[in-house]
Picture 1 (tube, one colour):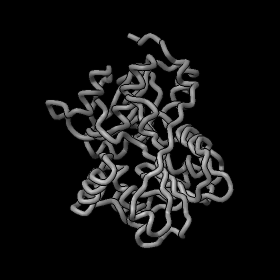
Picture 2 (cartoon, rainbow, N blue to C red):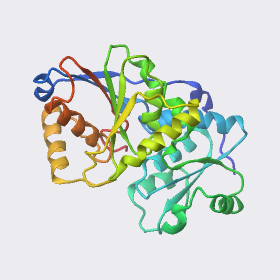
Picture 3 (cartoon, rainbow, N blue to C red):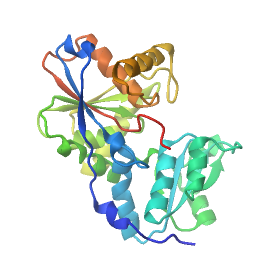
Length: 303
């Protein structure tokens, strides 16, 4: 049964987020100003880059007459959670194709998704690695019928266009804008949306994330026909890999919360903030540099 199509007018609203300056002695000593772009406050169930990456895709799905969204993700995927919330909010049926075998009881992420109407199905890890192949996608269409396909992590050309809107909301001069990088869509969009002068710096949350440079380039070409050439990715603050953490990262998270009363998400934002503060202490930013740090996800768990 199709969901009612209430509230879809909200899809045409470009929600923005506030700026908050962070004062820290580790920044003051090298003369760096750090301003947080609090995208975690955009929407209670679709925080940060999830809203930016999904919005244009949802508009496109609606315009093409789709009532069903299908996407991929791991068992702890914030993207899967966001797609489920978006489906419930905007009247789409949702299907989540989850990597690996089903484990009961469901974890909090998948429980949230199921409670918001998402149908969960599972692919073994070998098949999941080929999830974008025509044979796997065709098999899913035979099983579930017609659907609008959202890639893992939500990064595609439309997502890049959504993230490119972010720099236009910043009303203070800045030199560098930073974000965590998982699939590359957010960095690709932010860099593409910059005017002359500022550059974008991404922090890979993946071990061996050098391949992301090619992914970001590919996303910019898909969205705009060419790479913007004004961004770099730092691959030194992954803390062991995706969703992993080490003692140094844990120490940073605890210290940051003590100093600023802000709990950082260890998967994404903590790694970026750890990178920014470490580079500032190493004098990697010139004195007088203003840095924007995009908080791409919730500081605290979504209820």
